[in-house]
Length: 130
View 1 (tube, rainbow, N blue to C red):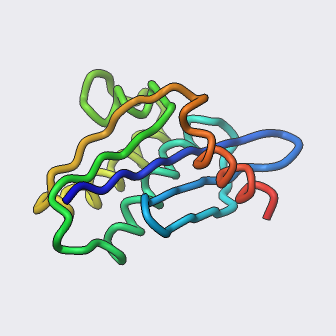
View 2: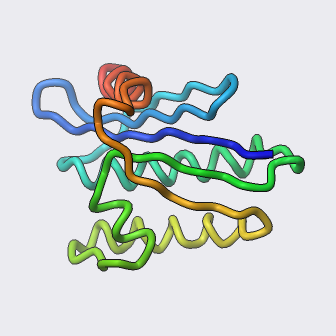
């Protein structure tokens, strides 16, 4: 069985920062976060998604695909590039810890165009306004 997860993070001066996670089926998650830049919000969205998986994962799930519109996050997660920002490095270390806890499942992260990630984006904006 395959599980698709869509994530997004947003950070703006006028409305704050938030994350959105949609786990295919029935989980829609929004949270307000502290972030001054979009990449920090995107990384935090992935971290929230992995934490939600720790709680909700069904053992029938064999493959997990995480979809994000962040090229930076995708490249860092697959090891194509490394985060240069200290805050992103710290978040990446925490992401790696949670990612490794889920190694019993096949997990991949995929980039998708922003216009195909509208639900996660609307959840992130909702979180920013909480």
